[in-house]
Amino acid sequence: MDRDIVLELTASAWEGPFAPEEQAAALSGLEAGRVLFLPRLGFQPAAVERTLLAPGALDDTRKNISLDPATGRLHGTALAGVERERLAAMLDRFGRQATALLHGLLPRYAPLLERARTSFRPAEIAGRQAAPRQDDTRLHVDAFPTRPMRGRRILRVFANIAPDGAARDWRVGENFADFAQAFLPRVRAGLPGQGWLMQRLGLTRGRRAPYDFLMLGLHDAGKLDEGYQARAPRTAVSFPSGTVWLCYTDSVLHAAIAGHCALEQTFHLPVTAMARPEQAPLRVLERLAGRQLA
Ligand code: SIN
Ligand code: FE
Image (cartoon, rainbow, N blue to C red; front, side):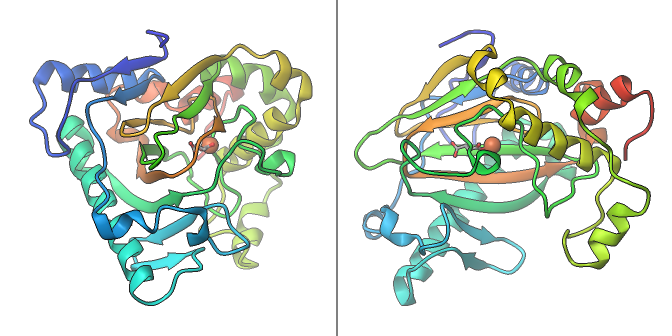
């Protein structure tokens, strides 16, 4: 795998211990836009959970099942009764392990790290039909229409738990600053009052800042640009079943090409918690735009 894009770590337990050099390398690599790859760490489904690891767990409308840690509720699953409870418990266990991993590996973030949704992604990515904006096989940075971040970071921990051993194949693109510089002239920061109005109408949870309009604009413009999708620089990265990886998906250009049965835990983090906040997309966009965006 490409040394610049992926930083391989030797950690083999969610709770550590983590050597100080490993913590320092993880922090600087992550903030510089690398993917941290932990080939010796895995999520172990219990025997009763293995029967749940199939696309049949999905309801018809979704590609992911998610657990909201605030309510403990599971969304997007066709499972009911004890199977539903088991799946929720498995996702919660993964979420707690992912939290322990970040607390141990990135202790600087621990006080301000917020655990958001946990997801289970059973469906095969390859061959799935999606509208271009929803198509995560296209290179993109993460930005979500209903969830304004107002500059906060999106940090995601993934585990490939495919029972048949299938790898999860990604492509990782150019660095965020180059991507943003190319696409920023094409996107708009929203009209005065638009963020307020969208929140009032219930279209967003919380108010979009100019940052959110720009990030969504970049997400869409990048995915819709066929020339960019065909020709932008990219590196293939393959995560074997039984491994874990994490990155800032709001700044790492990524595309998921193939694979099934992944777990994912999202964390939010204020820019001020970073060791080098100038590397946050908020700060990169503010430098390019010449003004405050959140
Ligand atoms: C994505 O965030 O675009 C999808 C990543 C994955 O499910 O592997
Ligand atoms: Fe994504």
